[in-house]
Amino acid sequence: MGTFEFEALARLEAKNRGIADLPLALVPHPLGGIREDEVVRKADLALQSVLKALTRA
Image 1 (cartoon, rainbow, N blue to C red):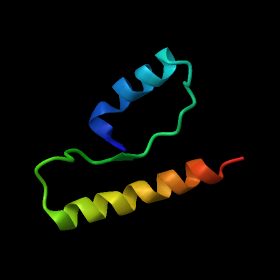
Image 2: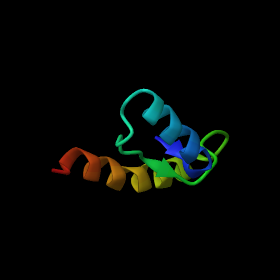
Image 3: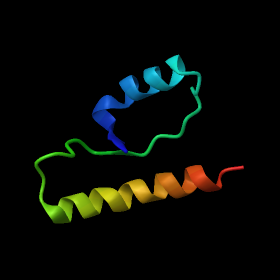
Image 4: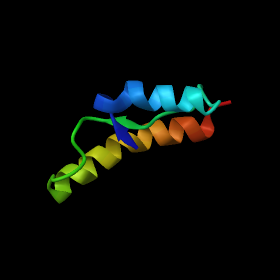
Protein backbone atom coordinates (compact mmCIF):
# COMPACT_ATOMS: atom_id res chain seq x y z
CA MET A 1 0.00 0.00 0.00
CA GLY A 2 1.17 3.50 -0.79
CA THR A 3 -0.18 6.98 -1.21
CA PHE A 4 -1.30 8.84 -4.30
CA GLU A 5 1.56 11.25 -3.61
CA PHE A 6 4.03 8.53 -4.64
CA GLU A 7 2.02 6.85 -7.42
CA ALA A 8 4.35 8.01 -10.21
CA LEU A 9 7.38 6.68 -8.33
CA ALA A 10 5.66 3.35 -7.62
CA ARG A 11 4.70 2.94 -11.29
CA LEU A 12 8.24 3.80 -12.42
CA GLU A 13 9.72 1.28 -9.99
CA ALA A 14 7.28 -1.40 -11.14
CA LYS A 15 8.14 -0.71 -14.79
CA ASN A 16 11.89 -0.77 -14.08
CA ARG A 17 11.49 -4.15 -12.37
CA GLY A 18 9.58 -5.63 -15.30
CA ILE A 19 6.12 -5.59 -13.69
CA ALA A 20 4.60 -2.47 -15.24
CA ASP A 21 1.08 -3.86 -14.88
CA LEU A 22 1.45 -4.37 -11.12
CA PRO A 23 -1.79 -3.30 -9.42
CA LEU A 24 -1.30 -0.64 -6.76
CA ALA A 25 -3.31 -0.09 -3.59
CA LEU A 26 -3.21 3.68 -3.14
CA VAL A 27 -4.71 5.85 -0.41
CA PRO A 28 -4.59 9.55 0.46
CA HIS A 29 -1.33 10.85 1.94
CA PRO A 30 0.02 10.64 4.66
CA LEU A 31 0.32 7.20 6.22
CA GLY A 32 2.56 8.11 9.15
CA GLY A 33 1.67 10.14 12.20
CA ILE A 34 -2.10 9.66 11.91
CA ARG A 35 -4.69 8.45 14.41
CA GLU A 36 -5.73 4.81 14.55
CA ASP A 37 -9.21 5.51 13.18
CA GLU A 38 -7.64 7.19 10.15
CA VAL A 39 -5.39 4.17 9.61
CA VAL A 40 -8.46 1.92 9.65
CA ARG A 41 -10.28 4.20 7.18
CA LYS A 42 -7.33 4.15 4.79
CA ALA A 43 -6.97 0.38 5.13
CA ASP A 44 -10.65 0.01 4.21
CA LEU A 45 -10.03 2.15 1.11
CA ALA A 46 -7.05 0.02 0.10
CA LEU A 47 -8.93 -3.23 0.65
CA GLN A 48 -11.09 -2.69 -2.42
CA SER A 49 -7.99 -2.26 -4.61
CA VAL A 50 -6.39 -5.37 -3.13
CA LEU A 51 -9.50 -7.49 -3.65
CA LYS A 52 -9.83 -6.27 -7.23
CA ALA A 53 -6.18 -7.10 -7.94
CA LEU A 54 -6.53 -10.58 -6.45
CA THR A 55 -9.66 -11.45 -8.40
CA ARG A 56 -8.95 -9.92 -11.81
CA ALA A 57 -8.85 -12.32 -14.71
